[in-house]
Length: 413
Image 1 (cartoon, rainbow, N blue to C red):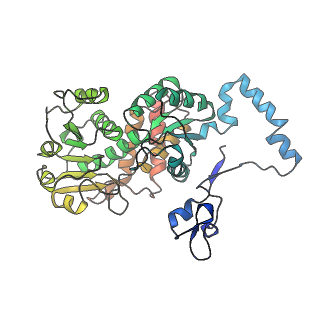
Image 2: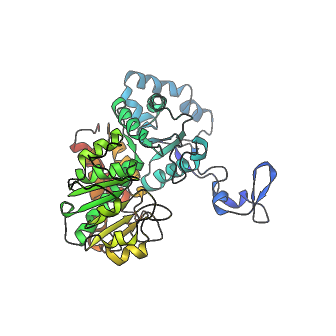
Image 3: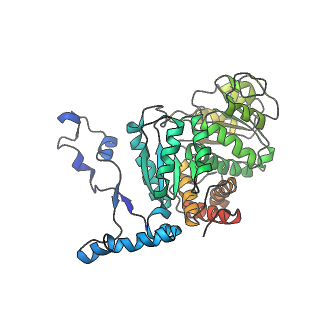
């Protein structure tokens, strides 16, 4: 059983002075800020799950009793899943190059986000996770380091690694490891987007195959969403970067975007994002920036606007609601929040439950379908995706992912 990740402080008041300020570095005082107060000392710790109260406990938890377990694992390596935390713990790995909207801020500055990710794993999926920030941005070094760390973990969640490096890192790690490797910035976003889109289509009496989408952003999330939606049966999708629609007639594309041009844009669109939106059924924003109101107005009737940039959506909800029948954002203060926490805890929980060797496309689609099904008969324009705090979410996703892993032959129990 894995060690439980806990917050060691029962009261954050210990981290602030009597005047309501937080102690700064080198003895200075800073104005009270609840974010700093909460983060002081970090957001997590490791707690033992067995007692060490006396010499008998010590002899079992450590020497000499531990030697029996070590010898058994040496003889039967698969026993590591039963007698260590491996089968229920994930490494959350970053190089700090694409952290939130802050960009390349380095490994140390990324740690608060990685800790946050780890406690979300625990809170929403019952999965233990360890944040690991690497002091390298070299692709080969990252891959070799993770491979060397892998014996301690049941899965690897790649986080906040910049594109296009993230694609190669994930692919090569999946080739070298026999445990799930999942880049949440890509696939978590894609899973939740598909779930919301399925329900939006159902609300308006359509199927995915009836829809043409336009994605703003050809980075990790945009590329993954485009591929995933097509895999799930979307009618067509065009992806736009800063220079316009990714199309076969462009000669400035990276290898990743060249592949994307071959897979997407059946309509053969070219030019600007704004021109591609004319008559489109779906806008998906994962890039930031602002989409002009006339471009939104040019979309098809009963369109969907998923403007997911934080903190400022590409299309403000007030404007989107003038023209779209369903509006979603990445923010918690508007309905229909596209939040990765709806996906990754349950996906890993399901994969670890059956000791899956990898996370397949089928497992991700199963996660999206399960997430969409949670909404059920409560479906409405303001409720196409459940809340992260809906207690039905993680169990539904976990069960669906585990079943899909077994069906696809990647489960080992």
